[in-house]
Length: 141
Image: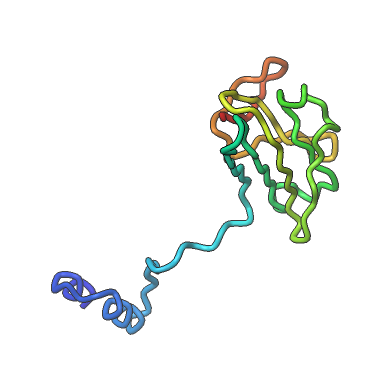
């Protein structure tokens, strides 16, 4: 029945009715999936008035693993572990916005509770760290 509905050009409403009758889960193409709270994100907003970009780093509550403090540490702050502490949001996520020069790339990592390092899964790329066997996340502007 599903196959004939598709072959004969039935619209998705008919398709949905048939799917409900047969208890089949179909994707909903009319809306976007809800955002996942278990991922990291980097949002870039390029400024029109000067060669700079506002970069918002977000580390979810789940990814922060119960940390009380999270810092963004990288080449943009000379790897200073206290220079850019992220703000904890009401939902438990950590967030920080920085304005950085464009036409540059920066290695960075997150530092949780001044002990544990982690990379951002949303980084543009990864490069080997010059001081350990780990890789650093790379932000390209």
